[in-house]
Length: 287
Ligand code: C2E
Ligand code: MG
Ligand code: MG
Ligand code: MG
Image (cartoon, rainbow, N blue to C red; front, top):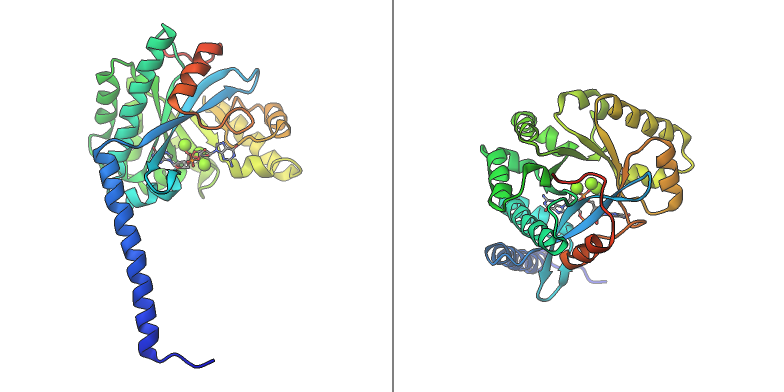
């Protein structure tokens, strides 16, 4: 095989880079337009009580209906939104759309007592000095109490925003908005710093749930983590439950709530309205 000249190699490298840059630029302008035109949508995944699978709450998960690529999952554009410093705008849009959906569900169900909805916060949002007030103002603008919405923050986000985050989360809790620690167990400092974080719920990461069956040592850690959370006055949600075996195991370990494909995929707002109309939902009502 003939060797390419150095010049040719450079040309090939540059044209490849050029194509990549164009793709990124197109995705970037598309995302800016989607935020401006508010065409992102939110799906909601049910969280159930492990005791009886009763509906307890929902998690709001953003999606981007893209003209050419179909419905894009967060992993395809949330990192870009973070790089472009658009993630706070995205997070506030998700909150606003979520509140509007709650109000619509209330009207359709004829009750204001509906399960709360949690939204995901990014580390960078803690750089917004009045983040708690912005969240509370948005919820209030929709006529909802702070308890109608909850915030999920990952352990790594908390580590990245170790300065401002605790006081902001404390302010939200003070106002009646609960705080969930997302993907719990994936960070480095898990148990040792738990007592310093103002929070109400820990969400055990799906990676543990997946490997729990058949790993007695991991089982011991999870069981003790759940007990510790309870001792600290917190409840525990297990993420990504896919099998009845995982559910049974987590139930015996004292886990309170579950989320995963075993119960439901993330649903669009209309599907949630139908679910609320049909299912009793009495676990953790908004008052
Ligand atoms: P997350 O907050 O940990 O959300 C849970 C993810 O697990 C969701 O993926 C959900 O669809 C998926 N999942 C639920 N049950 C199962 C299951 O049984 N098996 C498996 N394999 N997966 C399950 P999704 O919707 O793709 O979201 C991915 C991540 O994107 C979220 O992880 C969250 O970190 C981020 N994200 C989503 N929406 C937002 C948002 O509005 N703002 C920010 N900043 N991040 C968001
Ligand atoms: Mg989450
Ligand atoms: Mg999670
Ligand atoms: Mg996760």
